[in-house]
Image (cartoon, rainbow, N blue to C red; front, side, top):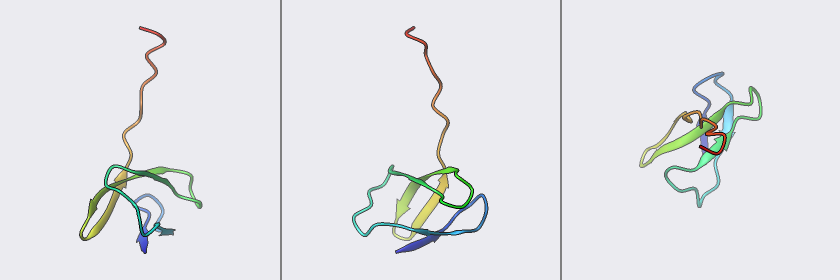
Length: 55
């Protein structure tokens, strides 16, 4: 399967066994994309995880 990077428009190769919520990197721009839907396949920018520094 293939999808388009929402940041730079590059073609992303998506594994056939991808699951919703999985994070995929864009090889062209390096942004992390989250699989938000499977039918049809949709990607969006992954939320940034904040460091909690042990709190």
